[in-house]
Length: 407
Image 1 (cartoon, rainbow, N blue to C red):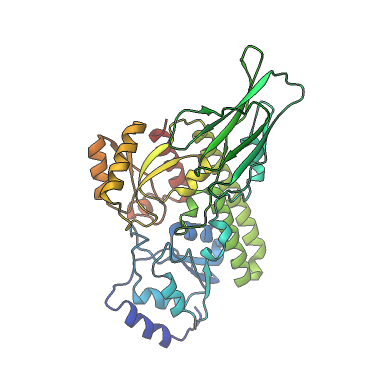
Image 2: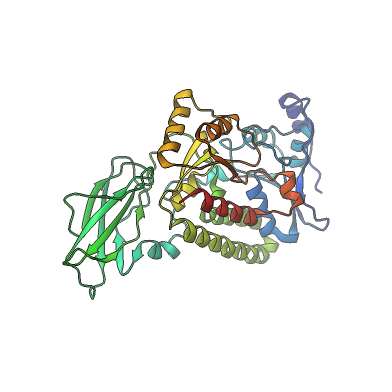
């Protein structure tokens, strides 16, 4: 382990979090490792472990079962991070302590890797790797939807074109739209040509085209395209790991940073990243296969941790709390959640593995719902560790829960 001056860090932490006890780390201990890396949330730890292999020992600052939004590290944690080679974290929208730690470690010989600085990770309409699947997602029975932008702002004009194989005969077509909080498709009046013009109204709005024969029988139907709206307001959603495609992008950033720190292992890091990328791509396909067939995709969740999963797969989350588990709703918002639950006939309330949510319990009792657990993957619980759970097993379990909770 390298020698790091501790005077600055010790002075800071005594003022910052005096009296806190040290966290009980979970790590991939490796006595022969060349590097020591600290991370914040579990998915970052997992990606770093998979890419670094035996070249690094990877620790998380969070003890099992902690609330990643509210946890504060102990002074010993910061000292140990200062003696490591790198600290990889999301940013202040996820870890409230991250800015303070970054400031404390600014004079230390430790590489700070903040994923929030990579803005494309968090943008709506992030199409990283989507070229491999977009044609399949937007084509059914020789119908192509063209002209979809990466993202729109509210009120932007949407201009789409539906094209069909020239060998397919049809008489006319209709365009249909559906909002994320609605079950039924609505025909768009006045549009019977292959060109659609509309307005971006709400994130998750879907549009499709159906081609008909002379007797109004369906000849061909496109898969829906989803309108992604990013008005660049509000807090950044930090929960990128719920989307396997964004997880690939985050893993590539981690891989590139590890190569900078330890260039002699570039070949190993690239090989391990490619294995992880393939597994994440398979996971994305599994989510698409299960969730694309759903019509009622609304779910009640403890807090708004599943926005990227919502964007990628059409799930409509009805969050009780905001992006942070501490953002509690007003009485009016609670009433609206209950009304939406009844409107959609929801039978489940999805709790999380590391927080007890009294408001979720109130809503569950109010609508007579059954509780399920949807793992937010921010941290592992002690049971997760004892059972040998990892990112993929938890994401697969989440898919089973989503399959059960949606219709």
